[in-house]
Length: 472
Image (cartoon, rainbow, N blue to C red; front, side, top):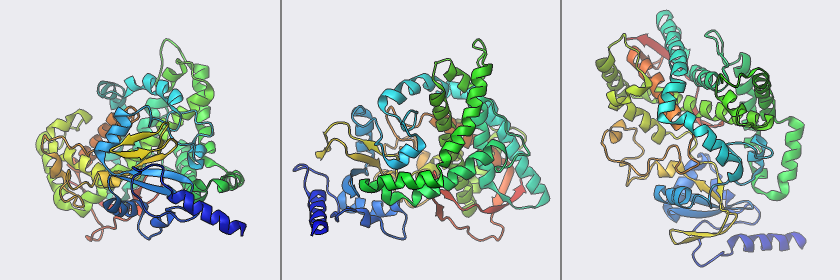
């Protein structure tokens, strides 16, 4: 009888109205709420995309015990994250986010009072001008290593798994600028700091994926933490490696000659924990997002060789075969730049964005959002808005060749808490792709289309295909 009463109570609670203007959403079942809507062979973003067509720009759904609003419209996401930023500035303290930062003392997960001053201090290092000054040497150095590797495989005829080398490239750039750690040409992603980072993180992400039920049903959270404590939180192992470099920098810093970004943070008098957490944030988020976007770009250009040829022809016409393309040459190669922008639209590596939490009740687009609501951007749907992107399911770089500003194009979010490193990301991705496709033809070893299935991780990425490399 007690169980029946609880189930009835849960059903009534999850289907009760907060107001007369709640966003529409699916019926909620006892305990699990609307989680049943995501039970499918399709990835969650496809299910939410389908639901958005039924329920509109703002959709309410109970993910277990978490009342959530899915934002399916770019203008509303802009209104929330820009105009009403103070209400939507923080992240909810969910079990998964707590694994990344147990005390939320960092840039990525922390509350406004923590991340805002850090962001303010670091922002000058990520402006367009500073990106060119601070990051360009590392982008060029490791970009040259990347093209050197392709040249070796073009000469030998050996197939090359590009995903691994994209990870190495973005990781090397980040580590050199952030804390002067140098990746050697002969290093693989299993070696040194890379080996101590990628493997543990991938294993931890898999563990967390298996614990999604614990994420949403609050009564199960203690069990989640207990299981994690038994199997180990490998994120803390990675942070332990980062902490070693933090300690070394603290001991060897010359305050008159800061070496890198970590030295700059030490000069802000951040404590060791905050230095470790922010260095980890900068290192991991920038590496995964850029590397996976590069992997998708390579796959799409292999599967659509006519687009690859347009990119290659434009680059060779602009620079010839002997000149290295620089990250500030985007305006000289509009089609190549448009191709990169289309990759970011067509295959967003985080199609369901990090949640925010409503700190106060508010009405958005006539819909009431109560305090404590989890607010989740649905980038998959936003970047496939047919009113902004005709034929949204077609990979078509030409859509970005006009001067018209596409308001739904928000691959890096919007507002004060958008992607800090967006200029760095665009520069390092453009530079890598431009120099690769100017100098090499990349193709499927069999001549057939390669599988474009998604693999879940910190960010979604393609299968690790082996490619045929030919010099142009």
